[in-house]
Amino acid sequence: MKKIKIIDVAEHAGVSKSTISQFLSGRFNYMSEKTKAKIEAAILELDYVPNPIARSLKTDKTKTIGVIVRDITGYDTSRVLRGIDDFCKTSEYNVLIYNTDFDAETEARALLSLKSMRVDGIIIASSGNNLETISKHVEAKFPLVQFQLEYDQCQTNIVLSDYREAAFQATEYLIKLGHTKICFLTQEFEGIRSRDERYQGYLAALNQYGIQQLPELVQYWDRANGFHTPLAETLISPAAPSVIFSQHLAITIDVIKTLKQLNLNIPEDISLLGFDDIPMVEHFKVPITVIKQNPYNVGIESAKLLLNNINNENLPITKITIPCELVERESCQRFIQKLGQ
Image (cartoon, rainbow, N blue to C red):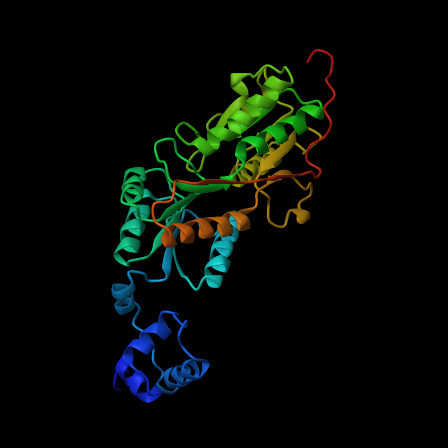
């Protein structure tokens, strides 16, 4: 089958090659409706498909962006991707998605592959292990936006939730319920500003209400090993908490499973407040009170910021914060101090 070229479409429509090029680039300023209709008909009749690589060489744009995520199956991640895709559709941009499964080497390959595909820009939730590469892209004025995780040593455009204010509101809510021993259960946050912001919000609320911050109430969890200190030990320690403030959906799920194994009930034995909403939470025995982020808006704003940088050079680095919402359910009960506690 003969490969259809622009010259074939031009001859079929009875117009010049340059007119076809203007049509394909969306430049209709001096083009009549009759001419547009003739070109559209010719494209359909000949089944012509533009060569995106050839077009990108002429326009220096592929109308394609890349998105790199750590876990494509995550509830919030899927909502971010939906926001990105919805906005890009309205701007006639295509989206290529890479899933890294939290692997730094996969992330590095994704960055390299997307650049070699001549994408116009990249949106990334980084592992934090390729910050030098990301910084080089930014220094070279390549359009790039990070979302949700912010790192001290990497200054880029970023869209993220208002973590500090959300953590402050959550901690204040627990304090007003009578809780003073609040376990802040988190992933390691050294060098990761967005996680540290949650910790600072937690501290700010304790300080505002004159509550001593006990170091042993800051506990750690990671995906590979789970709780650094067994949860059972934390709950019977001299500083035993009356509530756990979990900083990630995966941590919250692990807490729920562990409490069940320990035959401890929420909220009768211990209260629980989680960061990130939980899918199908209405089916839980005890619906969990959470800080609900707005991942769809994070996606919309990330795409909007990236496309703005693609279309406008030399813009200053921009940080956009999206408000969170405290959703009160049934996992936090009022705490009444007992004698001797």
